[in-house]
Amino acid sequence: MNITQRRLRRKLVITVVPMFLIIVSFYGLTYGSVTISLQEIWAVFHADGQPVHEKIIMNLRLPRVLIGLLVGACLAASGALLQGVMKNPLADPGIIGVSAGGGLAAIISMIVFPQLSYLLPVLAFLGALITSLMIYMMAWDKGASPLKIILAGVAINALLGAITNGFMVLYSERVQAVLPWLAGGLSGRSWHHLEFMAPYAITGLILTLFAIKPSNLLLLGDDSAKLLGQKVELQRFLIILLASLLAGTAVSVAGLIGFVGLVVPHAIRLLVGDDYRFLLPLSIVGGAALVVLADTIARSWFDPIELPVGILLAALGAPFFLFLLKKRGIMR
Image (tube, rainbow, N blue to C red; front, side, top):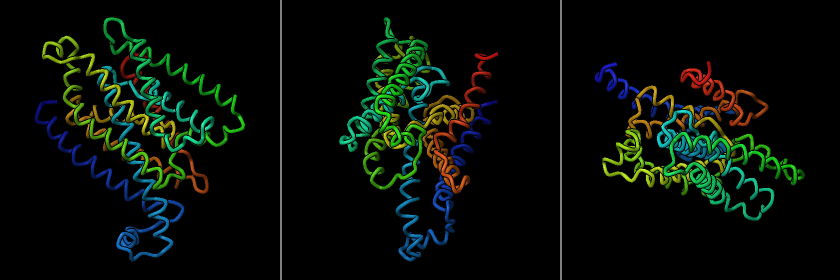
C-alpha cells in the first residue's frame, strides 16, 4: 500500500469510526425491552416527551450509555498503551493481570469491607497500580523488556486469579452479590456510578494525549529512543501507570470486562498503522462504540434475559485472540 492509499484509508477511518460511535449511542438509547423512536427521544430531551419514556431514557438508558462509552474508551486506551509500551499487539490489561489486580481490590472492598464501597474506583486503581508495579519489579533486570513484562504479567494474573477464588470460598455467603460484577456488565448502573467514575476516567483519557509522543518514540526501540534523548524506562513506567488508572477505573464500575483492550487497538492498527497520533484517539472512540453496542445487544437481543456484556465480549474476543495467535505464527 502506497502513501496516498494509506492517507485515504486513514481519512476514511477517521470519518467512519466517530459516525459509528454516534449511531451506536442512539441505538443504545432507542432499543431495549421498550423500543423508543428517535422522535420520542428528541421530545424527551426537550422536556416534551411522555413521562414513561422520560424515566426510561433519563434514569436507565442515558447513564448506562454514558458509562459504557467511558468504560470502553478506558479499556481500549489502556490496551493501546500497553501494546505500544510492550511492543506486542497481544498485550491487554486483562491478559497481563492489570484488570485482575483492580478486580481483586474491588472484590475485597465489596465482600470484606462493604462500608468502603464509595472508594471503589480509588481501590480498583490502587489494585491495578500495585499489580503494575509488581509486574514491573519482577520483569526488571537492568531494564524491563516487553517480553519480560508480559511473562511476569501472565504469572501475576494467575496468582491473582487464585487469590480471588480463595476470597470467594472464604466469604461464600457474600459471593452472590459480586457474581454479576465478576461476569462484567453494566446492569443497574446509574448516574451515581457515572458521577464517581467520570473524574478518574476523564482525567486518564486527557492524560493519554501526553502519551502519544513517547509511545511513538518507544516504537523505535529502546536504543533509538535513548539516542533521541528519551528517558525510556521512566516513560515506560509512566505509561504503564496511566494504563493502570484507565483499567482500574473501568473495572471499578463495569467489573471484569475483557478483550476490549485487545480487539479494538489491534483492529484500528490494521486499518491506520502504528502511529499513535491516529491509533490512540481512534482506539478510544472505537472502544467506546464497541462496549455500548455489545451492551445494547446483550440487554435487548436475549429478552427476557439480560446477558452480561462481559460474557458476550468474551465470546467474541476469544476467537479473535486465537486468530491473532495464528496470524503471528504462535500457534501452528
